Image (cartoon, rainbow, N blue to C red; front, side, top):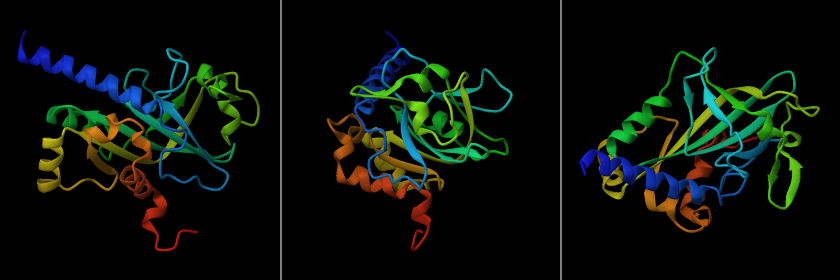
Amino acid sequence: MSEALRNDRKTIRLDNVVRARLKTWPQRPPGATASKGASWLRARPSEGEPIAQPYLKVPGSDRMRTIPDGLWLHFGGTPEDPYADILCIEACSTFQNLLDKRSRFAPSTTSLLAFCPLAWLLAPIQPGDETPRWRMIPACVAEPVAGLMLPVRDIRVLYGLQREHYAGFARNQVPQPHEYFCPMEALTAHEGHENPSMRSLISRASTSSAFMDPP
């Protein structure tokens, strides 16, 4: 078996482990807060797979989609002026994988949209809570009959790196303002969302962290 094929299989296994762990994380990212009148929902991985799940896209394209390992949407605004702030989590098993995923979220002159399929909007939030997701979204004043497209106002990305890549990156690289990093085992750990260090990291990945006294 070639080295490239072994690496591909290792990446697939690791991605599956991370997604399985992230599926146990709460609807609101650990350590995150919700703005007044806004709400968080875990978009990927969501309950009820293989139901259609939200994804990110550029306007006017039905092919250029970004599907993070983990995606949380912070729905805000009004029905007339809705938006979504997003937190993405990406597991990067190789350094090349990190470079590829970083390029997807690099600053750009084009805008980014979050698309929520109709089936996902109508489905219950989670087992034990039959509230349909659309009721948690300020932009939805009635039961939707089509998918919901929202402009992305703010984006934060948390990358999980193999320990040796994490150490080297921390020593030699400067993250972009929207980027955050953690060792891979923090994402694969049982109940990793309860880790105080993870909660502290995600609490800093917010717009309010830029203000001395948030309103």
